[in-house]
Image 1 (cartoon, rainbow, N blue to C red):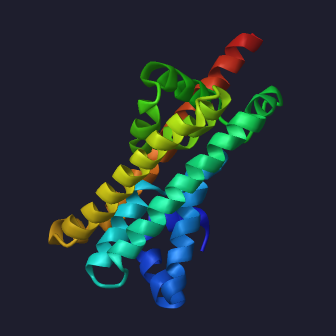
Image 2: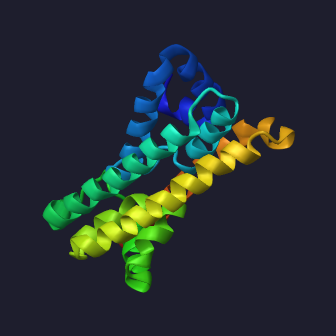
Length: 212
């Protein structure tokens, strides 16, 4: 099972993983959320859609919603914390190397968003694909105080995970939504992927124009 197949058919694959791995599914979900929020090179991992669909499976009794919420809130907090410290300790050096793994366009947007909203950006970015991966990194580079960052980090993680997991728990049982979980996952995947693709295309076109 490749990552893109998983993201496009989360509803199907998550059910298979639950059946195959039992309680270890909590570890898998923990690592996915940690990776999406903590590793600046993995912004394409599923976030919102994964939380919602996991909540829907919890409504069926296949997952414990309270344990799920606790673990994924913890993963989101730890992910952002790691991302913040990577930005604080190595961010400027990473940027100087012009890493091909980090979207310069998305990073610039994240920086502008951070400058406009300050600490609130850490909370708001939780609900914005791509930006939620880059904002903690930018906050670290900008040397936002550790205490202030953690306050917004914890608040954002609690709001994000709670709203999506419990939204999936309560609304995922509605037949219309239940029958279209795959579509919900696809929309979430495109929401994360499309901005990156547009940014890459824009950089490519701009590079062509500058070369002329």
